[in-house]
Image 1 (cartoon, helix red, strand yellow):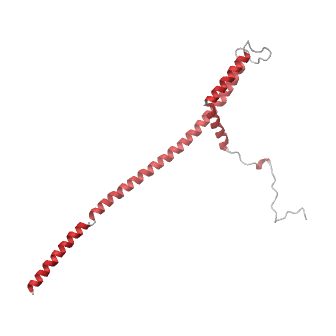
Image 2 (cartoon, one colour):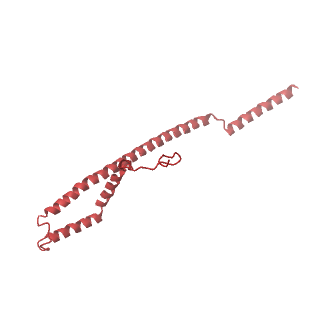
Length: 166
């Protein structure tokens, strides 16, 4: 009975190589951007300069004879620097492409915001124009007072005529 699966208990999770979580596709892009950012600093230039000077100093004829590994034309140093450049260039290009994609999205958002702002301004301009037109047709306080005075004068005249008839 212990071998049977109990329905009131969760199954144990079996791990396999396929059940690993998916790799983050942005991880390498972030790595490329941070590497490109570091390659463009004075710290990198300084460390690279120290590395090359030490390498050349160690492998020159006045360095220790038995510990030299790269003689005068410095073929191995050239190989290392070429290898570093061959990895740095694509990383820098990848970082630039990611930045270009971010800039493109930002420009599209700015373009959309500008179009919306223009539409809002046009709408408000039409509304202000319609309010001005509508306001021209609205009776003002002075107009109403003048009309009331005119009516009062007409009533006074009628009362005067009615009194004269009587």
